[in-house]
Length: 115
Length: 111
Image (cartoon, rainbow over all chains, first blue to last red; front, side):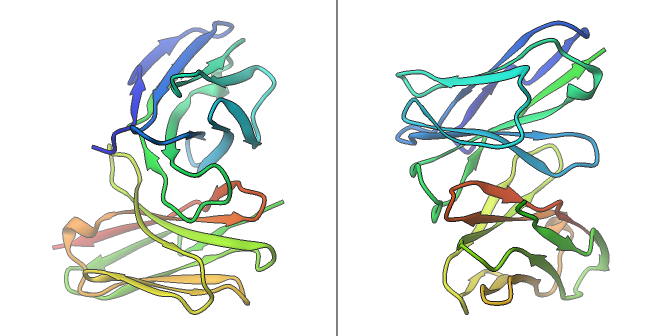
């Protein structure tokens, strides 16, 4: 158990809908990272938050948004869903906010299926 | 564009074989190189975080080396066991802060 909690574990929805994925980082970790893993793709970096502020941005679509709350949990909002958004979405946390010399701790992922 | 390449894409070995895989990354603005082990139906778990050129790290039968000047890292598994079957991911961290993952090497160890 990494200490990172993601909900829901599985989600099935229809095209055009909106979903919210939730992540609670490990106790004491200030950074939260979101990654997307689609079929035949590696882990694609979406976005990072550190202590409530956006720190780094990857290839995150404009239909997607995220935030980190004062209690450090984070939410990833996916809207106007398309079939291609079906993927496993991972949240990871770390203590540091800048370039990492410490490891990331991953949650178990949220598997999104868009029908 | 930060590109992290891993080879081979997949590897099938017999129990007891030793094996190694490669991670290639940009050699400029290097900050850290991570290795993760990802078992099916689980989440990735860190093996090593390496920061210095020439670094060598070891955990049991698994070890890794780092060459930041030429932009590569090797992961070695000595005497592979079926429980070593997993996808091994490397991730490159430059001074911009993003941690970019390679596609992984999928290892299958047959008893």
